[in-house]
Amino acid sequence: DDRLGKISAAAAADQRTDVLLIPLFQPLPGEPLRLDSALDAIDTGLGGALTRLLATSGFSGVLGDSVAATLPDGAPFASVAALGLGPAASFSSPRDLHARWGALI
Image (tube, rainbow, N blue to C red; front, top):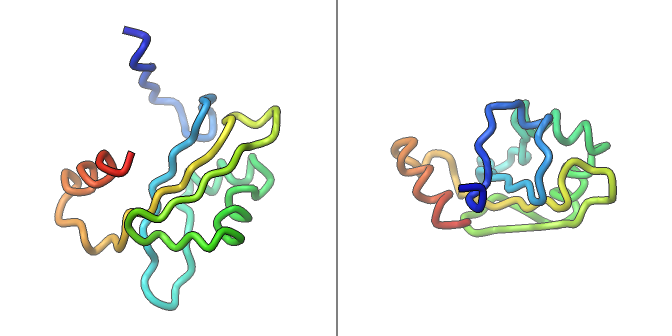
């Protein structure tokens, strides 16, 4: 059923979609928010727009924190939304992580 979308195994930087949802952990005290290698590649392709959005919005990665922006025409995504997952240490298993991510979206 195409109403549910399509699943792709292509690299994140090669995707084309309406909205890019980004789950981010809250960094440890005194550490900066960091993008993983897949998000870093996407950010590079967007000319650093993701890094600037996170830096200027006050996004902290606290559970439930969010920020969204519309991207310019020609970007591979119409918009991007980052959602805070809280501290990585608060997850006891990958299942717990998936459940929390599912609850947020």
